[in-house]
Length: 276
Length: 276
Image (tube, rainbow over all chains, first blue to last red):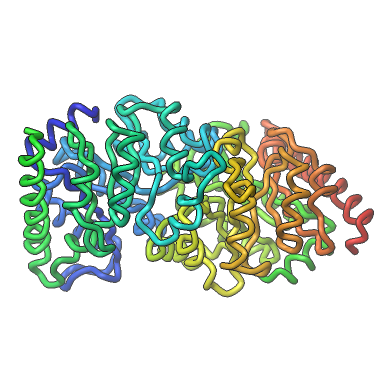
């Protein structure tokens, strides 16, 4: 998917919501079997109930890997279900991969060719060749970790370098030599909203994928205040508070209601910011 | 596997060789079908031909993921084959994972519970909680990326921090608060042997997993000179130059010969360093 297409979808749906399909087999609601097939059935019901309210889905690959090869099949079938039924949805494989160049090519083959994801989250620690391998695919995206939403972000990402930049700022600045606003996004956690303003100075036009709203404590208003640009430039991810909104047989309806609340709030922000 | 057991195996086999099972379906030798089943058959023949000469196997997970869920099955079956037939071999899932705490738990479930790997490579960018999740498993190990063997290591790992440390040095120092020499190793590329001496000052007793010998240009002698400690403290990984030593039906014999050369060289080093 291109940047222009993504922006069209945001305006049409009045939403910049990304839903995290972090489906834990141990948290499936009553009435859904706790099997890999149950995970797929749950995902399909969540997707059916929420696709009109969001512009992206982001399965975190760990949840599928934890089920072994059957989980991997569920991941394949989930992205296929989205692409077959809702081709205007942007898909993000949240896999946080990163390896030397020729190995990274294989990860690209896995997520872009085998599974047809639009994008993949990538960790920057191994540098240029580990990221560049993902940038040669037409209309595919790297979503590079910059400033994550967890406490551990303090340990290295917020370390100050000799040149006064923090490591995450260095990642943002240096990685712009490798890709463009048309094939790279950055992960920026909602839990440090004021740093988002600093990040916008470094990457005014790139899309930011923002986790950390909801269960992790970030605020949508603050994220929008500091992070929105004139092409929206935000995909805000929410996982648990949508997909586990209900735990009875009305779980899909409850997920729809939670997603609708967020979409409404986003619509208000988009109107206020004159994005239409 | 414990550190003591690993050291026993090194002395018994007179080897600190780790063989990288980076099996590319497109590079399988003549006579092996280019299918996931062919990858498994190839792995089994390589393992049968080399297990007495090495102490560890390290499949890079990317090679398996690139084949989809069937590749994941091959990975499962490969580690099962090793554990069933050669239980004294240390197994490393080279997956370079790293995610927020509760998600990292799921990766641990995938690699330690579902697949019974002894260890997993982990990327440090997301900090403490992304690493700690893997440290609570008895006799399981985190192999943390410190200084990798690729050119991109220059970009961030070798950046100097305000406190004069380089980022990889900071990772080595700080991460020792999270784990011990009995549940953590570090990845240190062979391509910068002199830095290995500096690394040994920071982590005198930890095992180092050293890739970059052979195809990537590192020297075994130099690695041993700068990196060996009194319990060996090294696992030197070689992939392509062993597993693709031959491309005809004698490939397993050729792999054995290449592994034997390295084992002989390692035996010489271990004798010289009085490790027996």
